[in-house]
Image (tube, rainbow, N blue to C red; front, side, top):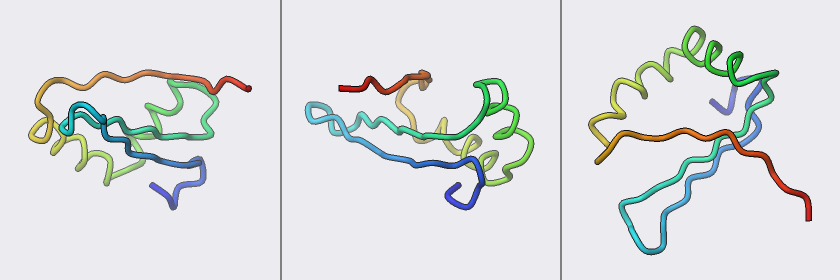
Length: 72
C-alpha cells in the first residue's frame, strides 16, 4: 500500500490489556470514504487477497471507523 499515490501512513497498535486486540490505522488522501472503498476494491489485488485471508485471522468481525485528528 505504501506505493499507492493516495497512501499517507499506516500504524498497527496492540492493546495493553488484551494482547490479542489490534487496531490498524490507515491514513489516505481520498476525497471521500466512498472513493476510498471504491479504490481499494477495484484497483488493489493485494487488498483482495488480504480481505480473503482476514476472516481466518479474526476472533470476531472487525469494525471500521472514520476518525479525524483533533488539534491540541
